[in-house]
Length: 138
Image (cartoon, rainbow, N blue to C red):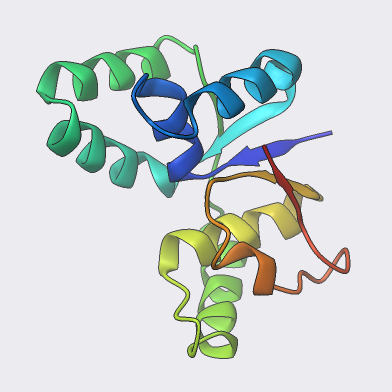
C-alpha cells in the first residue's frame, strides 16, 4: 500500500511547533515504509520551510531527500499533468491548486487510497476515479 504525503503533512512532520506535529509523527512512525512524497510537493515544502523555519531547515530537508530518507513518487507528465488539469477544472470553485490536484492525480495512477494530509478543505471534496473518496490521515 502506498500513502502519499502532502505539503502540510511534511511540514507537520518537520516542524516541532506545528499543531499537527504529534499526529503526523505518530502516523509516520507506523507507516514510514509506505509513505511517498509526490514530486510536486517538494518546491512547496522547500519554500515554506525556508520562509517559516529558515534556510538551514530547507537545506537539511533537501539533503534528506537526496540521501533517500524520504521516498519519492514521480510526476508522470503525460498522465498526471492532464489529470491534474481536469481536476483543476472540475473543482475550480473549491479552489483546488495544482499541487493538490497533482497529488490526487498521482494517487489515482499508483492506486493510493490514503493521503497523509493536514488539508481538510481540498482533499475531502475530490472524488478520485479509483475509490469513492480518499482516506485522510492522520
